[in-house]
Image (cartoon, rainbow, N blue to C red):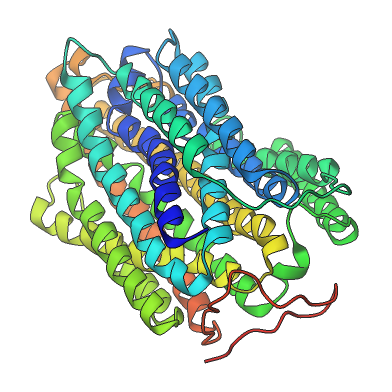
Length: 511
């Protein structure tokens, strides 16, 4: 495709990406109101987020591999239909259980959209030029994450709309993107008569990851850390994932290309991406809850208060993308980004329910800057190391581990938050002479509580959130350490690598 054709197709791809990303951010700030209106609990609050991430994580490597075997454009159109239909139905739910189930279906489409957009861009432009386009992706990320909370807050606060429109919003965007891509996206697809999907490997990976995340979600609340349930779930997950590794090393078309991930740079980039995803998604998803429950802001105000983080993402991704395309070097920006990310979370680890908002804004800006400089550049490291025929599987693999990190982060931090909040609320209510019912089943609808009880709940959520960011800072530090050991590889200027015999290492340009 020519540069003009790339830009035309990119407009539709960016719309698709915006729809997928805004579906999470527009809901995040409205989620306390949604769960409160549906009479949900803190555990269900976490599951509304986890269900989407879980489905997205489990399906991402499959979509990536399918992109190597079949028509990328058709796959993208199927994903758009799945995502739009699920978004529409999410706005029609009448219970938290229904919402969790449909958010899982929405996650299937979301995982496909996120990886297929990256694969298609990778099939159109070289890794070096991709740095510039990553700036556009970062801009969309920032606009969706800034605009999403603002839209979510405005929609939730508007009586004539209601929170249902937080889900309906993605539908017209998907319809417009589908129409644009049908006219502008033209890829030279090579038909593969011998294409074969590794269904066994995909099933084992999905089952193993799902079982592990179910354990993370329920442990400490429904059963103890040392119990037969823990033993059964952890052992079962280990067996399933171990079997998946065996299968992936033996099949001809693996879902997760183990031979790629065994190389130094893809392995380190995967570890760093796992850490960035865990820290970013795991920590940031609870900001909206903090501002609304602990500080008493409206959904719209909570969205406005997250602008510093999203502004950091937008500026850092645009600037870093241009510099990467100009120099062809990516390691310095990844190292700087993970370091800044760690510093931002370390600053936020000191907050409580009375922290100065200017200080919080500075910490969120550092977090956003770190994410903008590192997240997409880590994908570039992996894409630069594989030929075009493996681009989908490689992109799906690193997106899978980043999503896995986010899912584990949300589950673990959600469990930590629920546990700490339950203990703090119980102590606070005991001081008031009230018997606590348990944090896992307590309502999040503060308007229905007596003022003294609501104040106890606000303080509990505010003080506990700082501990979550401390955990996120430690995880981000692990990503920084992994980034330090990356090779100073120079990005290639061709879409495809020189063809190498199977089993041999592809030639890379070292700077």
